[in-house]
Length: 105
Image (cartoon, rainbow, N blue to C red; front, side, top):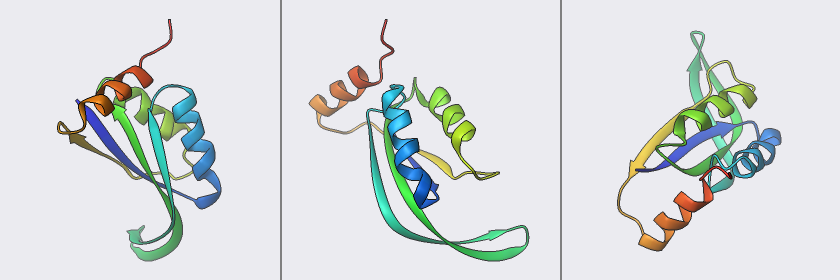
Protein backbone atom coordinates (compact mmCIF):
# COMPACT_ATOMS: atom_id res chain seq x y z
CA UNK A 1 0.00 0.00 0.00
CA UNK A 2 1.15 3.52 -0.77
CA UNK A 3 0.26 6.62 1.20
CA UNK A 4 0.08 10.36 0.82
CA UNK A 5 0.61 11.85 4.27
CA UNK A 6 -0.53 15.41 4.96
CA UNK A 7 1.42 17.33 7.59
CA UNK A 8 1.15 21.03 8.35
CA UNK A 9 4.16 22.76 9.89
CA UNK A 10 5.34 26.27 10.66
CA UNK A 11 6.89 27.66 7.45
CA UNK A 12 10.39 27.90 8.94
CA UNK A 13 10.44 24.15 9.73
CA UNK A 14 9.05 22.77 6.46
CA UNK A 15 12.20 22.26 4.38
CA UNK A 16 14.20 20.79 7.25
CA UNK A 17 11.48 18.24 8.01
CA UNK A 18 11.02 17.37 4.33
CA UNK A 19 14.76 16.84 3.76
CA UNK A 20 15.07 14.69 6.87
CA UNK A 21 12.23 12.37 5.83
CA UNK A 22 13.66 11.89 2.34
CA UNK A 23 17.25 11.57 3.55
CA UNK A 24 16.24 8.89 6.04
CA UNK A 25 14.27 7.05 3.33
CA UNK A 26 11.02 7.41 5.25
CA UNK A 27 9.54 9.23 2.24
CA UNK A 28 10.25 8.99 -1.45
CA UNK A 29 9.17 12.57 -2.06
CA UNK A 30 7.83 15.52 -0.10
CA UNK A 31 6.06 18.41 -1.80
CA UNK A 32 6.35 21.65 0.17
CA UNK A 33 3.29 23.85 -0.36
CA UNK A 34 3.78 27.26 1.27
CA UNK A 35 1.12 29.84 1.96
CA UNK A 36 -1.44 27.73 3.83
CA UNK A 37 -3.55 29.67 6.32
CA UNK A 38 -4.95 27.36 8.99
CA UNK A 39 -7.96 28.22 11.12
CA UNK A 40 -8.57 25.71 13.89
CA UNK A 41 -9.86 25.23 17.41
CA UNK A 42 -7.20 24.74 20.10
CA UNK A 43 -7.74 24.76 23.84
CA UNK A 44 -11.24 26.16 23.49
CA UNK A 45 -10.26 29.07 21.26
CA UNK A 46 -10.29 29.64 17.51
CA UNK A 47 -6.75 30.21 16.30
CA UNK A 48 -5.33 31.24 12.93
CA UNK A 49 -1.75 30.69 11.79
CA UNK A 50 0.31 30.64 8.61
CA UNK A 51 1.55 27.13 7.86
CA UNK A 52 3.17 25.09 5.13
CA UNK A 53 1.56 21.87 3.95
CA UNK A 54 3.78 18.87 3.33
CA UNK A 55 2.51 16.21 0.91
CA UNK A 56 4.58 13.19 1.81
CA UNK A 57 4.65 10.06 -0.36
CA UNK A 58 5.57 6.86 1.45
CA UNK A 59 4.64 3.21 1.85
CA UNK A 60 2.47 1.52 4.43
CA UNK A 61 5.54 -0.30 5.71
CA UNK A 62 7.38 2.96 6.37
CA UNK A 63 4.42 4.81 7.86
CA UNK A 64 4.99 3.89 11.54
CA UNK A 65 8.60 5.09 11.41
CA UNK A 66 7.62 8.20 9.43
CA UNK A 67 4.92 9.08 11.96
CA UNK A 68 7.33 8.62 14.87
CA UNK A 69 9.97 10.78 13.16
CA UNK A 70 7.50 13.57 12.34
CA UNK A 71 6.29 13.54 15.96
CA UNK A 72 9.88 13.74 17.22
CA UNK A 73 10.76 16.72 15.00
CA UNK A 74 7.46 18.61 14.96
CA UNK A 75 7.14 21.63 17.24
CA UNK A 76 3.39 21.18 17.88
CA UNK A 77 2.01 19.29 20.85
CA UNK A 78 -0.49 17.60 18.52
CA UNK A 79 0.75 17.73 14.93
CA UNK A 80 -1.57 17.14 12.00
CA UNK A 81 -0.53 13.81 10.48
CA UNK A 82 -3.17 12.41 8.13
CA UNK A 83 -2.39 9.37 5.98
CA UNK A 84 -4.44 8.76 2.84
CA UNK A 85 -3.92 5.39 1.15
CA UNK A 86 -3.86 5.06 -2.60
CA UNK A 87 -3.74 1.94 -4.71
CA UNK A 88 -4.03 3.48 -8.16
CA UNK A 89 -0.98 5.23 -9.52
CA UNK A 90 1.39 4.94 -12.42
CA UNK A 91 3.08 1.53 -11.93
CA UNK A 92 6.50 3.05 -12.50
CA UNK A 93 5.80 5.60 -9.76
CA UNK A 94 4.73 2.84 -7.38
CA UNK A 95 7.97 0.95 -8.08
CA UNK A 96 10.07 4.08 -7.64
CA UNK A 97 8.35 4.83 -4.33
CA UNK A 98 9.02 1.34 -2.98
CA UNK A 99 12.68 1.52 -4.06
CA UNK A 100 13.11 5.03 -2.64
CA UNK A 101 11.87 4.02 0.80
CA UNK A 102 13.66 0.70 1.18
CA UNK A 103 16.26 0.76 3.94
CA UNK A 104 19.82 0.62 2.67
CA UNK A 105 21.53 -2.58 3.71
